[in-house]
Image (cartoon, rainbow, N blue to C red; front, side, top):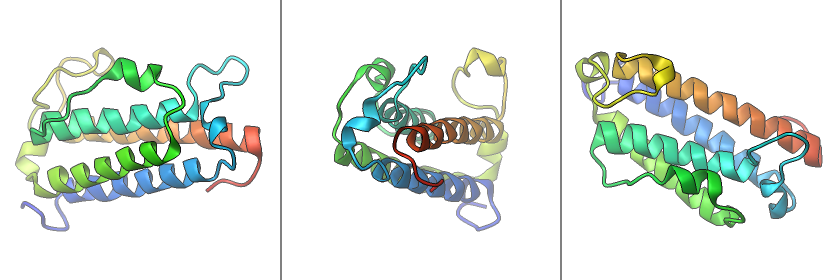
Length: 161
């Protein structure tokens, strides 16, 4: 099916690219860039950290594993880097969007319905199709995007974006 509108790859790409746009809007809704790095109360991960993690996660699991890109994940940096400028985070998110369009726009349904071609996170068990794993990645993205939205509204106010 390739890039046909009814195939799974472009459908997942469309959803994830849209949600990455929402992530950018969240980050841009912080009036003070320093607030991207705050962790109030028992919060462990700042919005900046979560944004780096979301882009890195998708670049790795979709770009590198499914698409064979040359992206090399540094998960420790996703969770350890601080004070990365907002413009740099947005640049990484835009690069991730391009990766998703390229990789998922060109993958056929048979590939997505076959087993994911790399080791899955332990929480998913040993076997899942690439499509099932993409559904999990989409859920994971939404979970963290909701955390960022809640953090922003608690820290600086405003409505959901």
